[in-house]
Length: 291
Image 1 (cartoon, rainbow, N blue to C red):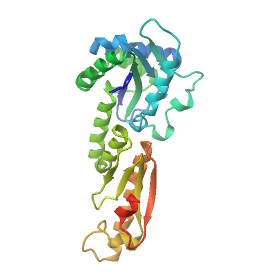
Image 2: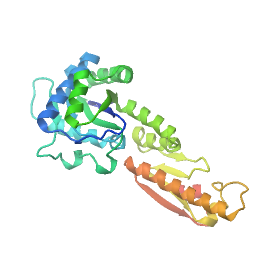
Image 3: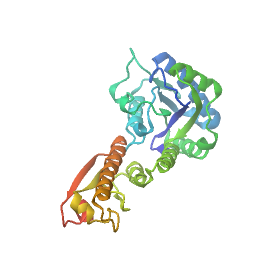
Image 4: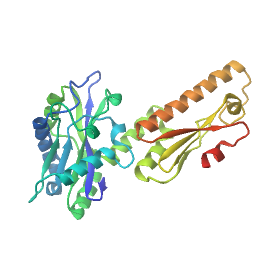
């Protein structure tokens, strides 16, 4: 992906089943070694990339930490690269832990640790024309050809203390497409269009309007969720049609509320705030969310 003066991507480490990294960040020296190898790999795939500054954040992140509106992790890396001293040619810059810690805005969040896919964000930055050229080639080639060199993968495995099945490079578009497929596989596909809109078209509206799924609206970067009480839900399109058994209706309403909480949690993990808008009896839920 090319964003103005930068191409944004990630090193994707697919961990072996049951493998847990011994550490989620690297010291500065090891981060520098890994950054040099990753920059070399990318230059092999797209030689023009060697003409851009390359910066790697040497921490392990969950996809939800990268796939947030306006790409905040990458934006902070860009800001730091722009402020970094040095001129006269392309630079390789690594952001590693000093005294065991990273700056607060660059720290992996413990709430999202433990997943099988761990990501190290990177940025390629420089002349806009070269960024556009490199960005187009990365979008075209990384998904199919972007496996890391064996030496790069081995250094990452030893440095993080984890067993790695695959190490590859992705643009943020590639990552978004991968997560969209995963969400669809686990039943979260209906909420992905809202996340995608927040990522790629911030400011635009989007709806999840597919009963019996909860009603959601993305508006001005925030998600609004229609909250119904039991009576209102029973008379709505979200309740099972023709069902009259009270016990089964109660269980279905509990499941509906659980689904609401699940979708809200997914959106908030992606950095999209969620508000619950109560729809009283007689109120049309679409009208409440449009207000």
